[in-house]
Structure formats: structure tokens, C-alpha cells
Image (cartoon, rainbow, N blue to C red):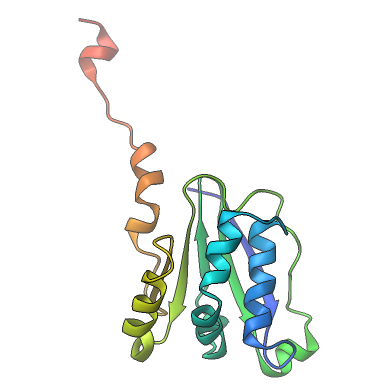
Length: 158
């Protein structure tokens, strides 16, 4: 079982969806410039659309990497203004270490266009139906590297 970190960001009306995505990118990139930041900002419009649809209210934006998994939720309306459920603290690890991926939850009606728009900018950032779990393909590299096979000949010595 892998470690999971969770963060919750204040969104509309406390901050607009675009500023919410920028805050999430700041968390993920730890404020550093670089290729990952550029790639995440390239999908700002699409990510802001997903955030404005309130998809990450109950279904997490999920970030996988060579370390712990990160789940990011958003608060809306009075919860965003009041803000007591928010936790935008920095993570104690690099959430984009190694082979990272970001999976955005999306309303079913918008899924096809969101997936198409993301594909134009990134292969690491994908969308899924908000009712679906993060697909096994998103963590396939990690799972494959952790699969153990018992070799009785190697164990017992030939």
C-alpha cells in the first residue's frame, strides 16, 4: 500500500478557477520553474474548466509519481469563503518525482473534449470520469516495478 497525501484548496468564490489551478501548480512544483511547471501551466484553461465545474469537490485531482500519491480536492461556495476545511500546506516530498502523472476528475458530459484538449499539451496530464478511480495505467509503471515473482530454482539454488 502506498502513502497518500491529501490537500484541499479554496476555490470559487474565494479565488477563481484559474487562480486555483495556479495555486495547485505552485504546490506540485514547489514553486520551482522547469519543464513540469511549464507542462502543468500549458493545460491551465482545461484544468480551470474542470475546477469551475466543481469536479474536484468530491473526486480528487490525483498525482502519482515515484513517491507518495497526492490527492487534491477543492472547496466551493461558503466552504471556500469560510476556509476551515482548507489545507494548502507544502508537501514534505516532491510530488512530481520521476515518472509523474496527473489525473483530473471530469464531468461525464465534458470528458471527451477535456481528454482531447489535454492530449494536445501533455501525455502526463489526463482526465477521467469523476466517478471512476484513477486507472491502473496511471500507476502501471510503479506497480510493474514492484511486482515480485518467486523463482524456486533461484531460491533453492540449482
